[in-house]
Length: 110
Length: 188
Image (cartoon, rainbow over all chains, first blue to last red; front, side, top):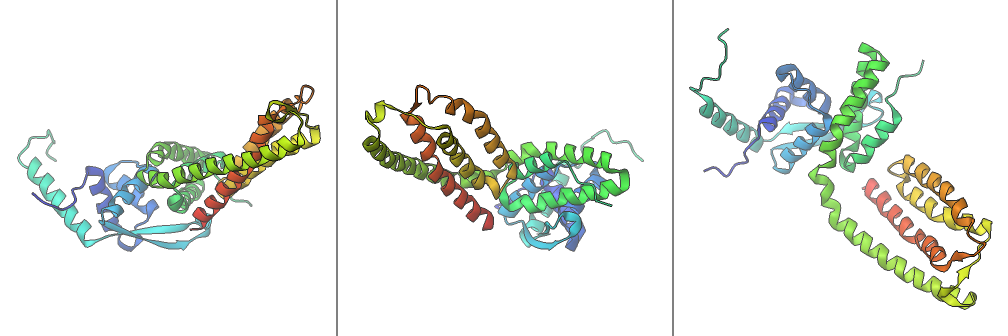
């Protein structure tokens, strides 16, 4: 049994998006990345609630960025995946892969 | 040419339901998306998209665990307010008892001018307390007061009940206290 934090499906999506975006990971591009890759249109409330949960677990960290006129002078909050977060994501993906390997899920072959 | 802007009531609603530390981030994100949508698809569709996003965000934000971290402070503030109201009412009661013949069982005849002041004072206090967070609350408080004031001030024929006068005056200190705390919280 592992003592590491386990991730839910949506938490994995959010962390993967943050990892992909690197230094540009704040609310707007994170939601856009999830929409572009999975087709899921996530509400800002849901995204920030999940990010806060991940932050509380110590899996991501946030830093307040610059404010821009297009944002009405509101500052961006940038997120970064921490080492523990990357490990938790890797573990969750490995576990999921092991669970579904060999299953017939009804995918059509390309 | 002025920039299009999202519907103000919805923006205020969003600010009201968002935990204070995330307010700038979420409000800013939605404004940024709104401006981009307005350029790409026009202001009407942008406003529609904004409404949809806000409506979909309300429930997750209302059930945000972070909101409940303030419960002990809210309970402590409420208890403090109750004590404060009690003490203040008691002190006022003593003063009124000495002034009004008949004491607490009597009625106080309040002139229209004083009645309006009595009614507006707590409302202004509450309004000021919320001003740091949402100007709409001030409007609601004043509108409510304006609706209630004539009805209560019409009572002086038989006299305004003693406890009504006490209640209205006693509401002011906790309102100002709450205002001060909210301002400190939003500043911190």
